[in-house]
Amino acid sequence: MSRACLCVLCGLPAAGKSSLSRSVCLAARRRGWRAAVVQYDRLIPDQAFQTREADDDATSQEAVSFQMASCVFTIPRTEWKIHRNAVLRCLDEFLEKQEMPIERPGDSGIDGPAWERCARALLTPPLDPARADAAPLLILLDDNFYYPSMRYEVFQLARKYSLGFCQVYVQCRLDLCVSRNETRPRPVPAEVIEEMAKRLESPNPTKNPWEAKSIAVDTRVMELISCALSDPLSPFEDDVEQKEADRHRCATSVVHQADQACRRLISEAMKKARGQLSATLFKSLAAHLSESKTRVLQDLRRHFVQDLNFSRGEDDMDVDHVVKTAVMRFDCEKQEILLKVVQHHSNF
Image (cartoon, rainbow, N blue to C red; front, top):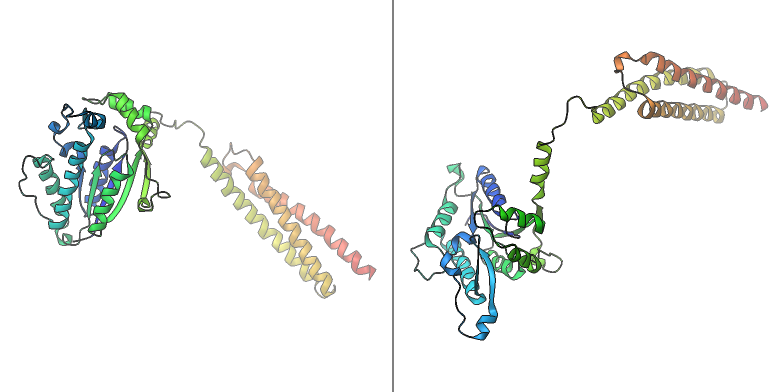
């Protein structure tokens, strides 16, 4: 078998699992993979969720409401587990044989035609026939999977065939799920979603090491994008980021010019001092001039970045005048430093 991965999509009804699974499946096929979605609510027949009268009190106490195929039915918990196991059993056989499923008896627990469509999608060759044998296989399992035990069954199946296993928890606020659900043709009662939200246990790698490869996806990302689409930026508003970039670019240019001019002054001063000062004073002069230059240039950059008004472009500014002003300041400090060094030399 080529590389394969079972990916569990879990979350509340109307959280966005189906939309996400379609997008991921399409993206996988574009990458040359074989991919398909195993949707539990399409595989388990509707009649499996018909309300049944309990045979005894014990069975009645096990009855619980579940959501599937966008409907809610009260069924014995044992029956529900049988149908979930049927899906995994079919998937198990597919992974073992890698071929179209044979016709199944009516009591198999899943919808035969629906499973055949799913298997056919899994067997569909990738876009590049030359890579068909090496094309990875991605199987997305789309269901609520609100208990870790439900997800662990898939993990065991992946381990049986040495497949990759990961989980995507489609996280969504309860009120948003309820709101989205109300727009569906056959909505689930809100109280069912609320009850499932209480029971839902999201992947917890700390508690369950086998859930290490799990991520949470917040479907509010699409809402954020939709909000941005409905609120486009005006071309007449000030572009703060661009102004900031222009400010730094101009400051860098001006500081660079001032730095070059100050370096020339230092070079001239050091040439004149060479041979007239002791080695110790010569090094001290170089250090003081370098510190003075650094201080002048830092003040110059701070002035440009913080104080300069960029209502006008750089072309309208007298850059030469700004550079000369900074250099004149350094020249004055240079003269003071030279005077102090000379006085110190005279004292010795």
